[in-house]
Length: 154
Image 1: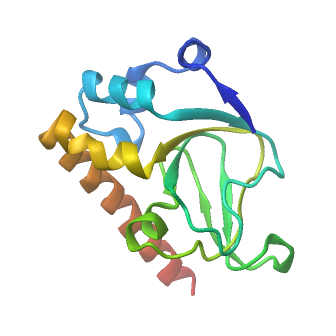
Image 2: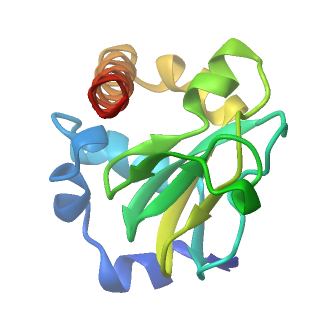
């Protein structure tokens, strides 16, 4: 994974583009801008690991570009739980529940992700309580959609 600066990220992605993604829906530009200033931004390649099976996350990732696969257990066992798409997140449930990640998470192809640390997430209500609530609702909606998708497939 290669860390990107905010300036590098801004060359390809506008705040308006992010607001079209489900996790950023209904968030104002100022709040999204704050997230971009405080988060870590990465460009990944196929085979990079966002999380490895059993890892205790200290944050979560939001996919901006590309797809990533969530496995149950190590990737080599090839038990796919979900394929995440732009606007979806991974690691959020494990971070909140303080549980280990259930499996490897790896990009299908090159991707761009934002890493939101647990400290950044916890500080958001102090920045803007209403906007942080909207973000939490968006993240919860994504979790619910993933759960329903998984339930239907099984």
